[in-house]
Length: 316
Figure (cartoon, rainbow, N blue to C red):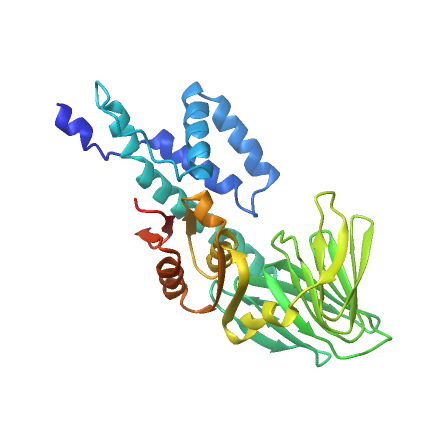
């Protein structure tokens, strides 16, 4: 019956699987094995490729709502009614995979923090480390070196000077070397992975080097170059006290940062809205309150589809 078609909310396993692959491959944790498995799934059935193309387009351009013009069979409306459930399923999958990879890193780590948690510790040499949300690191302290591998997340270091034992933090292919200083390192693919509050740090990646002084942060260029530029590093380190400070960042950037402190995903539905600038201070321990405050300021709407999926944009 036409009425049933208009209100169809049944599951579409291919659509949900496609949404799951989009969520998985857009994650920083995606591996070559994941990509190979996806290619095998996509090649197995032409319907898989079509569903993936549709969900990938929606993921990138979700601000354009589905066509609501009458369709002869009601099939378009039936398909559209499954989009939000599919996105919810994708967010659930992304959250589960993120938890799985985070758990693996925590099992390898000497120090770690959970999603939304900020922890503090003293290292064997007396240096101080602060771990931001969802962070894991491995320690290797010997008589000749102090080496830390940042497996995931972000950490700041207040280093006790010891010229005979350089202090090095590695994150992926990047390394930051200091003797006695205060600085932070991010391992999440940020364009600004290192910032220095005191002293100097030598940053190296893929054969490129940059010497970063107090009040500067490293910027990755499109050509993978490393450049030391002036930055408000103390503002960037406010998370250590549980505060997130923004001064003129785009809403898209703010939502990405808030997303680091909660399980699941925050999806921005309106690209133009995402380009608007945000200035304010938020509590890192209450991202729901922060989302509501941003929405009120921007005149946007927040729709909580599930605990793992929040949509932010113009009226739905």
